[in-house]
Length: 203
Ligand SMILES: C[S@@+](CC[C@H](N)C(=O)[O-])C[C@H]1O[C@@H](n2cnc3c(N)ncnc32)[C@H](O)[C@@H]1O
Image 1: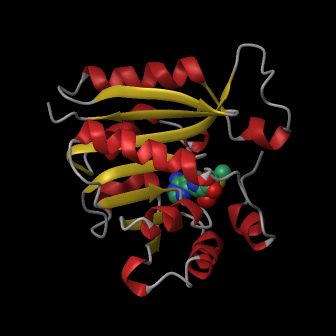
Image 2 (image 1 turned 135 degrees about the horizontal axis):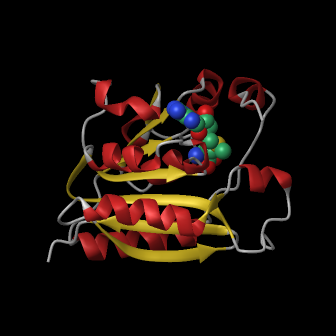
């Protein structure tokens, strides 16, 4: 399938968003493990900016990056009502090339939602996210995951943005094997979405 994000975003494509209570629970889990307030977030492949908006409204200074200009135009429009102080910042950039982007600094949390299916070199990608995390930083990967019989995935659209749970876990563990402190700390399902929370505990 040729990926035509520009056209899809211009035509108004939308993706499943995290329910507010699920996000609140995730944030409190991370805050507990981190032992400190979450102050900053980077949302890679932010699309139309819904998650970035949810994080910003909770007082987390958030930057969203997406390769699609049409997505970022929508993200800016979708968050224009948020007070300037809490409004996310957005930029158009390739998330496979964060190291060469001087605007991308370090963050307490890095989020990738419905994005990992489009990343070819996943281990390299996770390592690059690790390089942009603060000490005691946390990475949240959210993706539809294929079960052995694909039963949970009823729509072709969902299947197109899915990854195999086992291979994703293998990639994550390969990355963790080369870092001293970064570990998978929480894994949960939210409908057909798998949520993988990895990071560095303070204790
Ligand atoms: C399925 S959408 C998910 C969007 C958003 N995270 C959400 O959950 O609504 C995947 C997004 O990843 C972005 N993307 C894919 N590969 C990318 C890359 N190499 N650099 C930047 N963005 C990319 C696409 O432009 C698209 O907005």
